[in-house]
Structures are given as C-alpha cells and as structure tokens.
Image (cartoon, rainbow, N blue to C red; front, side):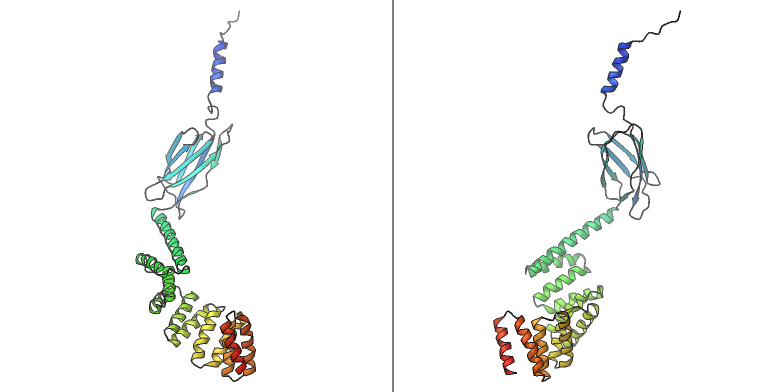
Length: 313
C-alpha cells in the first residue's frame, strides 16, 4: 500500500495569496543598466558617486564608477529614477532615468555616456553667462540713451577682464555718442588689435578720427573697414565727405557713386554726388542728382534748400 503525502492545501493556498499580495515582488529584478562616465575630453572618470532614488518607492541605490569609468546596476525594478553623479573637482550632474515598463525577464540597457564637466569649466561657463547678460544689458542701455549707466557697468566688466572685446566695443560706442572721441578711439583701437577682421571697429575708428579733424587717419580707417566689408555704405559716404572737404572731388564722387550702387535712392548720397558735379561744373548732371535727392527727403527745410540750389543752377 502506497504512503500518501500529507498536503496542507489551506497553507499552500495562503502562501500563494501572500505572494500575489506583495506588489512588485515578482518583477523585482527587471533591469540591468550599465554605462560609462567621461570628462569633456572623453577620458573615463573613476570614483564618481552615483545615487539613484525611485520616485515612487523612495528606494535608493548607489555605487562608484570603476577605473575605466564603468558602472552597472543589476536587477533594478521598473520605475522612474532620479540620478545624481558627483565627484570632487567636477560639477554635480542630475538626470532622470525612466524605466516604467514592467519586464518578465531581465532587460539589459546601455546608458549613453555621461559627461561630467570639471568645476573650473562649470565656473567658466557661468562667468560667460554673466558676461553675456551684462553685455546685453549694456547694449540696451545705450539704445535707450542711458550712456552714463552703460559706461559705469562696462567699466566694472573691464575691471574684471580688460581684454573683453565686446565690452570695449560697447564702451567705445557709448563714449562716441557722448562725443568723448579720444576715449572712444582708445577703446576701438584695442578692439581692432584684438579682432583685426572686425570691420565695425575700423569704421568707428574712422568716425572718431573724422570728428577729431584727423582726415588722413580717418581715411585709412575707412579704407580698412571697406576692405573687410565692401558693402558698408556708411564707410563709402563718410570717407567721401572727408575727401570732398579736402577738395578731392573726383575721389569723393567715386565713393558717393559706389554708395549709390548699394543704396540708389538714399537722398544724402544723391545730394553729395550732385554737389560734386557742381564742383565739376557739370550742372545738368548736378540738377539730375539733386532732383532725385529732393524727392527722398521728408524735411521741408532741406527740400526748400535744394529747390533754391536747383533754381540757381
């Protein structure tokens, strides 16, 4: 007669119910996550502390990267994890890993390379952001006419970094608008030295020299500006004014004409070209240009002056 094994059916059923009642127990070991931590030069970073926290359960997991920067978390349950990477000398990095889908079997997932920025790099990035904000604020002040406020702010920036080309250019513009041309010249000269391909710096130098009655230096600065930016109509016009004042009429007319190629309807360009033709005693051509200039002005006084000049011709 075969022995019968005693099976406590009630106890087995109870254990089954208990297992079903424990949430997440069946899928506790669902994900195998691995990856590397590198610096900005793509070198592995050893000893980085990695802390994970499940948003729902508040379970936490942690480890440090190995010599090759590697890390792995084997058997993580599904969930949304807040991740913090920290190591002395590096800026702390935060991330979020979303692995919300339950898995029947272990899923192996490679985390994209994590890049840590050194503390000094992070500080430099922050400094540049502050400088950029200061430059923008100063430019807004200049546009709004608060020249003294802009100069004060830009001086503070230049005390920290005397070679900040953007701050030097803006303080030069503020000085120029205040007609403090020697101060503006000094600022623009530094910009031109640091950024020899920056046409605007040479153009502004030309303006400063022109306002200080230094025609030869103004012409040289405008020449450089036009070499760098042949579409600069203001440089053509301003240098032509300098030449016209020196009675170099043919050279002046050539530059006014070049400006008109770029802006054919500009009344100031047309008027000055007409004046050049008056000096050349070509009155029909002068009248042609002055008539065109007259139609472009909205200033009644200027229109009246040109009418009288045309009548005289």
